[in-house]
Length: 197
Picture 1 (cartoon, rainbow, N blue to C red):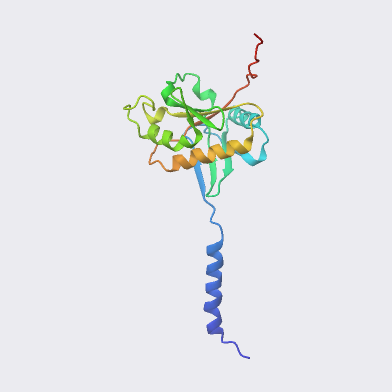
Picture 2: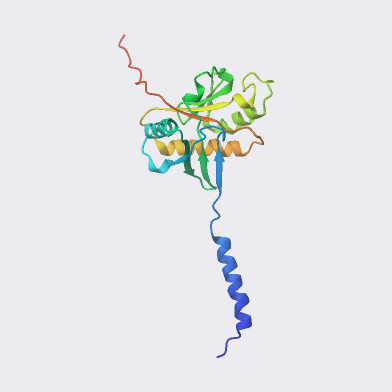
């Protein structure tokens, strides 16, 4: 049986094209201010650490060595890289509560002294980034907005990764040129003891 090579070549080309379309295209999205930590970049993959304490130690040590920390994590849509801000840059910072979004636990959001459910992240970010001082519950200007993620030393990293995915997905829906500024803060205070009456 003789095979006509002119007929086989287009079939092989089509098969190769179909295989290349099925390969996952790697998308990398970067968040955070690009004008801070001007040194070399040092990466940390969230899947490689066990606790929130390790994350904050990595950020602090990297900045002390004049390098830029980059927090890496995967979502179903992309690889995401977050450049955090840190307390060293906030020494002279005197924020108004309306300029802060705080995540003290991964099941709630504190904004302007009100607690919102975690599903409100998109609503809060849209209002903050689009507010022009009209609504006193939201930031006076998006340049001042900061998200503070405050956890305890042994907080679950998998929950943190889910929280960061929600935050970055909500941010991606907003048409803004302002950076997403995230501060990781370690709450070292022991839990309050109940006193007997």
